[in-house]
Each structure stands twice: as structure tokens, then as C-alpha cells.
Length: 355
Ligand SMILES: *Cc1c(COP(=O)(O)O)cnc(C)c1O
Picture 1: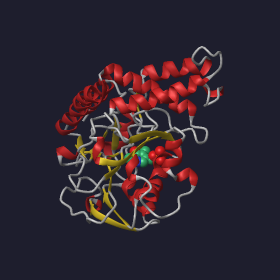
Picture 2: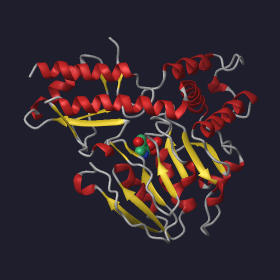
Picture 3: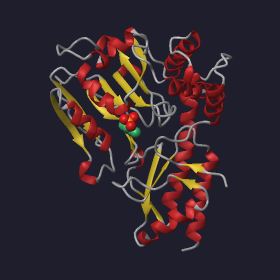
Picture 4: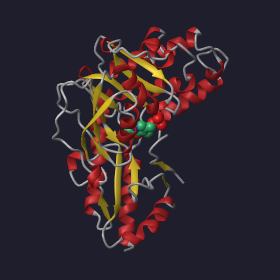
């Protein structure tokens, strides 16, 4: 039976990425060696890193004056590297969910954190839009896609530089990089396997604060060594490059955004139509294009486990919702084929007929 992979992360990758990576695990760039067993300083691997950086710049139209890095430690390490390197005495944070909260917790080690707005009052099911930012804050941090709560945030219009955790929607829609001092994303949602973390940082924003920064946590260390200060995660970077090539071939971020809008639109339409299900995000403009969260509609709550089993028997994998929301979550990242979304919709329709 065909499996439809709706896991939130690590998550589905393009067939192209898996095929090319499998080949290189056995014979990388004609070396007769595995990509896992060659020096990161070999000319073959340096070419992988260079092309990956160049494609990130091309696909996201990264302006001059920014560095693209592939680091380790996940988005979770960026929660502290960001304030370590960029926060003078104060920084502003928008709290839209569990990942925002974790970023806020780490930032508090470095100075005053102003939580400009929060949607905790409604279990993060909406995005606050009206808020004031302190003019003396170093930046405004936000989470562009709330993987757990199924909401998305469009770049806030503020006078401060932005810092964003784009782990779960990078490359899913265009982004105006010039507004940001820093963008970071764990690879394992829309790029590659876990183990690599993409960082896009504005060079000019660095070196402005007084605190000493340990070598590995200083972005300038990694900029100066082109992500090779220490051994990078070579296999995840190789796989990420394949996804970037795949995306370019498809027409880039603008082209995939159209597909993402279509895919998410189909699924939300079904959730809104089907009497058994209800979206957890009432405002349509706040709904994530990547993580579609839904619950059983009032009156059908007791059928939750039954639907999970029904869907699992039809090849749906990873649709159980996060424990803090309950219900279901269908993660439909860039690599998710339209046909898999259709298969889920058909499953929901078949289940409706049983009730
Ligand atoms: C998955 C995720 C993280 C955690 O990333 P790690 O690489 O595991 O540290 C952080 N933020 C968001 C928005 C995520 O989706």
C-alpha cells in the first residue's frame, strides 16, 4: 500500500533528493567513496557546500551583504545564538506558540525580553496583529510558521530589523530577506534530513554588541570559514543541495507557493465542508500552508481514534495531532504531492459516509 507521509518533522523529502542521496551514499561524485566518508575539505565536498549556498541565495533572492551558513544544533541552538550575537540590552518577541516560547526563554539569558503580543489566551489559534514594539529593542523575533498550532505569520511591518525562525516554512513562499538581520531554519521540515541548520545573517548586524561570544557560537567564526570551522554535517548538506536543485527545477519559491496554496486550500475546504471535522484556526488568513491542524467537530469527538485507525489503514502516516492541540495535523510541506493531499481528502469523505 502506498504510504502518504504527513509527519511534521523530520518529514517528507522529494523522491529526487532520496534517489540522489542514495546514489552518493554508495559513490559520491565519481570518487568511488561514500559522501559520508570523504573529507569535508575535498574539492568534491567543497563544491557541494558552494552550490548549496549559491542556490539558497538564488532561490530566496538574498541581497548582497548577507551570509548563508549551514550549521548544526538545530533551530533550538539558534534560539540562543540569535540573542547572543544580536541583542544589545533588549529584544522584542512575538509569542505565537511553543517554538516562540522556547526562543523567548533562551533570549532571557542575554537581556530584557519584551513580549510584544501573545496568543496564549486562545491556545495559540490566531496571530496577534496589533502590537507596539519598543524602539530601543535590537530586533523583533517571530516564528513564521507555527508547526504545532497550524498558523502562519506574515512579516510584521515594524521599524526594527526582523529575526525569524522559518524552520517549517522556509522555501514555501517568497521572503523579503532585506527586512531581516537573521533567518534560521532546521533542515528537517522543508530542506533535508535533520542535522543541518540553515542560517542567513546580515553581516553588518554582527559585531555591534560588547559581550564576548564563545567561538562556536559566534556567527563570524562560521562566516570566516564558509561553514567549515569544524566538520559540517556533510550528508544532510548534500541532501539539502538535492532539494534545492529540485526546487529550482520546479520554478523556485514562487512556483511552489502556488502549489502550496492549492494543496492547503483543498484540504481546508474539505475540513470546512465535512460535518465530522473542524479547523482549529478560525481566521482563514492565519492558517498555515504547511501544517493543517483539525479536530473532530462538536458531537463527533468520540470518533477521533476511529478516524485515526481508518486513515492509517488507508496509508496515511503521521496525522496524529500534537498533544498540545489534539486531533489531527497533516503536514504538507513542499515535497508533499498533491495526490497525497487528495488521498487524505478522499479518506475524510469516505469516513463521513460511515457516520
Ligand atoms: C521543528 C521546529 C523547531 C525545532 O527545530 P530543531 O532543529 O529540532 O531544534 C523550531 N522551530 C520550529 C518552527 C520548528 O518547526
